[in-house]
Image (tube, rainbow, N blue to C red; front, side, top):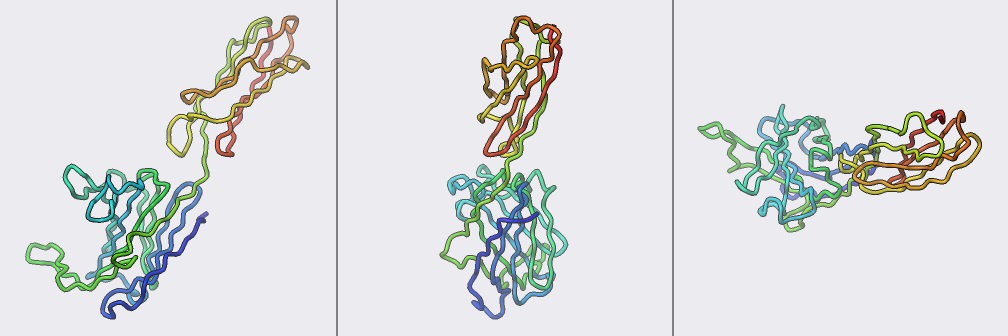
Length: 272
């Protein structure tokens, strides 16, 4: 489901002979799929003489990207029948075809261009500074390269106004990689440990912090956790199993909460 929608207006009618961007609408869903709709009022079809581009500073750091384009880290280039994602390379001072293109799609209708891409393919961006460019009247030179000499263009925002800013809002998800407990079976008079490894969608890596909750009962007796922590992506709880509980069931849960999202795992093991 697409949400977090924001409309960025652009001046209209700057050049009656140029494609006219009236606005850019950006939205994203909980998984970080970003949709751009570039509304172009006077080009109902994407013709062979047109080119549409998005430049994007995805890391909120102008010093790491293209110094001629407000620190842009990525460029999306759309021409009839083809769209590509390009990443700025400081060492060569140009844009190279990005390694991942899997999430990038486009369409074009009478109102303009729609471009979809995952935030993950833009470096996991959370704050996006971007601008749109459209041109028509492009021809090919003798070497088959595009010639913009007589092209008519429009920029959004207008020249001198920097870039638009859009915050990508996603819902954090947690994934449990493994759930273990020991010893098996639980032993009266000994400590018992249960836990799991967890990763978070924000970083696609191990969880670094969160709130750990531990519950356990030996038969009907409630046990207080000795330890409860998350470290290096591993969530763990420990309890001391009381004496005289042999034959009873040790039951409990281990849960982790990060930014309002909770994962929980349960265990039930006989005490020997």
